[in-house]
Length: 506
Image (tube, rainbow, N blue to C red; front, side, top):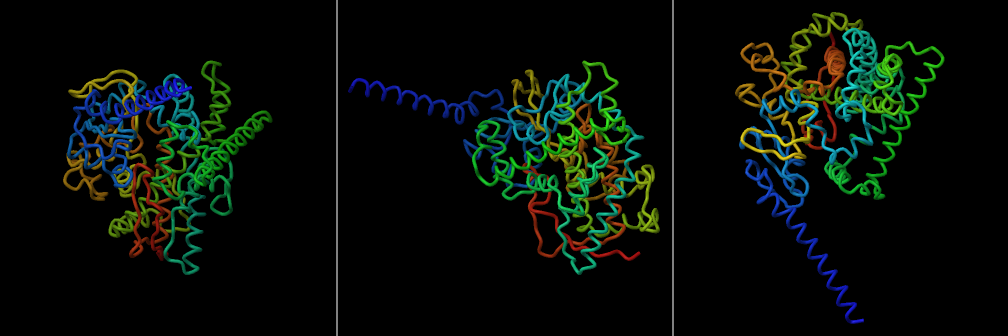
């Protein structure tokens, strides 16, 4: 018996020692002394388990100071001290986004939650699947189709205006605008995406509540950490804590609503009633005409609905909030925009611009471009290289996590001059500045075949919502109100955008 216990003790000691040795190697030896990335400059690791995540989670935009300090190719340490790259070199970005776009994929070890929320739709599809989906979906986003969506944007903008006006009339001046704008953009994507009335602005809606739970819940840092851990330890999402319950319930609602929408569209098609110009109707009609090898499956069509729902409302909502925040803090710019809008639309009660009219407003365009520069919808985009690559003088092994440092490019003094960090819409009227701007250093919607397919839709909706609000209201900061900006968890004001709102009489 003694010999058996001795043998068991030996094996336990052996495995414990081996595990400790393996952990020591992965966390403390490989990153610093063996990794092919070890000689790339960058910030020192802050913690062997969490690397530089503390800075990434708690600071506003650490990538900007890192790029300015260490150069356009930098290494930082991610979860479990794994070396990760930030890239602000436009030649490398050209390879990632254009020349070798399908050699750089979304990192499989970072997508667990994203796949649950959005499915394997266009945003998360890769390779041949992405090519096929993109080719099929392009006709749904033509110039003419987006023109036909403008009346819907205007209709929802009037509803949003009315709700804010009601609050002001009741004596409220300090208003949390985040939920109203988010619900407005959800209503828009319901109509132009599926010809479906969510009516989330005017009534309780389970889908709006689901997205609010996913995107605006408490403890954003903990939500981010759990999301990251779920890629390595899937059962993390099964732990019965309140945060996981909200996440799983919200995902169940999104899945159920998406399935219902696709069923209803197929029923319309069977009855010969699928004549709408909404995106899913267009996709189903296009799908009918394709050879079998190019068709989307029912599952893929469901994924497109899930993708439209999340990408189609959150980006525009956040950008509109940032524009209002910036204009509240720069009242002269707000006044200049309002003057342009008054000239274009003297009677605000008859605000009814066409696609061409709203896109012809010069200063509105400047405001929108500058908002997207200062607060890009995606401050970075992440990829993994399928093949060994050479970045400058460095050999990059395959399966390296690579982040394109969009915010660092958008605030680079080399591109934008000494006022790169300032909100200055007039810079877009200066040829000496705009001559330096390319599709490789200004990337609010990325570029190439992985660029946002709905960027023209989003921009037009953004302009109409912003124009409606600035034409009807004056926005000012709330004295003493502060919020956090943590771009790794969500590139938006946290916990919400609060502004002082009053009616503009004129």
